Amino acid sequence: MRITLKAVAFALCCVPAPAIAAKGLAHEVEINEGLIAISMANVVRETCPSISARLLRAWFYITSLEAEARSLGYSPQEVSAFVKDPVEKSRVLSIAQKRLADHGVIPDQPATYCTFGLAEIQAGSAIGKLLKAN
Image 1 (cartoon, rainbow, N blue to C red):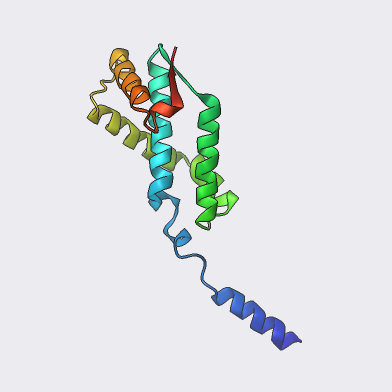
Image 2: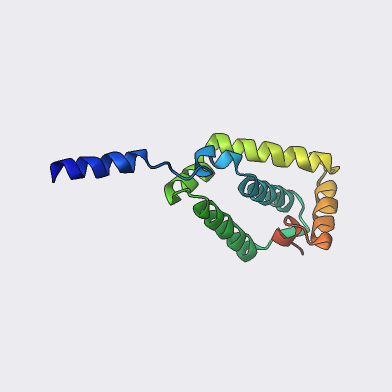
């Protein structure tokens, strides 16, 4: 019996985890693009006084990203640690700010955030679906 338990334990240790999960959440394109969209929408709604968040829709979107991460083999603890990690938060925000700038948004000019946000709402993009005009 003891040998059987050792064999089972050895076999379990040798079973590879899902190959995709081994990459790490920072390398999951769909998850990261979703987080970047959320971050961009958040920056827009915080800066533009005439745009607010669709909080329920944002919550459902975040939940879908969590479910996607789980389907890729990540544990709830890994997902939570990733989204709470200050380095990852900073990385995502930095990408979001660069993309906003690439779309003509100028820091310290709220009107440019409003123009971008309204265009995204009109286009029905991932970002626009998280925002609403007041």
